[in-house]
Image 1 (tube, one colour):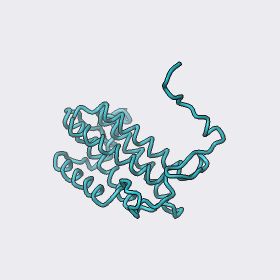
Image 2 (cartoon, rainbow, N blue to C red; image 1 turned 90 degrees about the vertical axis):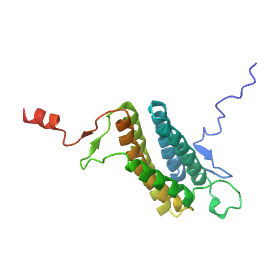
Image 3 (tube, rainbow, N blue to C red; image 1 turned 60 degrees about the vertical axis):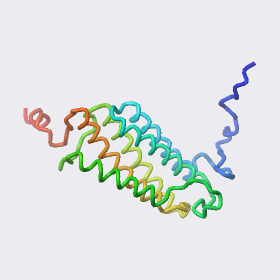
Image 4 (cartoon, rainbow, N blue to C red; image 1 turned 90 degrees about the horizontal axis):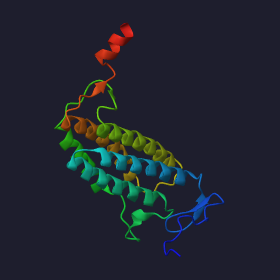
Amino acid sequence: MSDNPKIYTKQGDAGKTSLFMGGVVSKSHLRIETCGSLDNAVSAIGLARSLSKNSAITTLLLDLQHDLFTISAEISSVQDLTLNETKILIIQESHVRKLEKKLDEFREEIDISKEFVLPGGSSGSASIDLARALVRSSERKIVEFNESGELKNQKIIQYINRLSDLLFVMARLEDKLNDFKEVTTSDNKRKKIIED
């Protein structure tokens, strides 16, 4: 007989799930939908981390995954963790500033096209762009959650907004570091195909 615990608990078979630090809600609750959108983003960042060829980028992507787990923990609790009574890590101004600092650093290393960039220059950058798109989706859920009056920590909205910008820049840097040319919406090859 194996000592390993079973993966399934059957506790969610009625469509309910337990919240962090107490409480039970429907799995369709906006709080859970928001956490699910963050889970999508964390997984996509993990994919990007596995495909990137640059250690500075992969190290930062891992940090970002930890931050998104922190956000998910905050959202999955009905308690106001900003009161610091629980001593649980929450997203703070320092997290937002960290992203801004990285944005400024990476921005100095790349040229940003005036055209829309199409994902797919390299597998690394494409996966980062996918993560960016899912972070944007999470942002929309977080804003909806905030508008419901449930979001306690307003720094989360600032953080998630900076994060999608940072991921865009990281994707461009990933291509540059690996000598991939980005493809834009005004790509001449496409124009020629259309004209022909």
